[in-house]
Image (cartoon, rainbow, N blue to C red; front, side, top):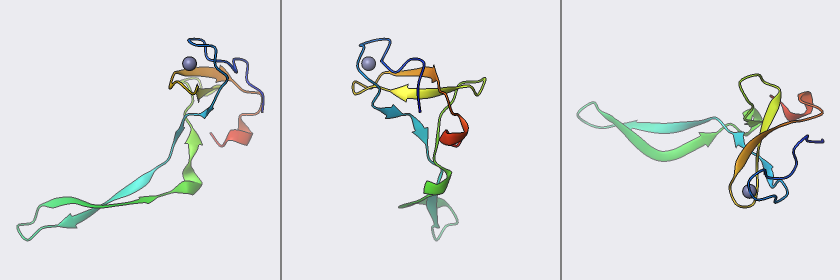
Length: 82
Ligand SMILES: [Zn+2]
């Protein structure tokens, strides 16, 4: 894949990766009084991982080694599983 802005606009480092979201289920447990609390485990749905995109759906969120994030056009959106 090729990006229109492969270097960080803030520090000029080369892109480290795409900034992705991965859905998951934070497991809950019921207490004796009927409340719920987090049980401590998360079932991560790796197959639904996808890069965050901008509101137009045409740019991917990228991140540099220093943690800066920016949006960039990418040549093949379908390849990125938006
Ligand atoms: Zn940066």
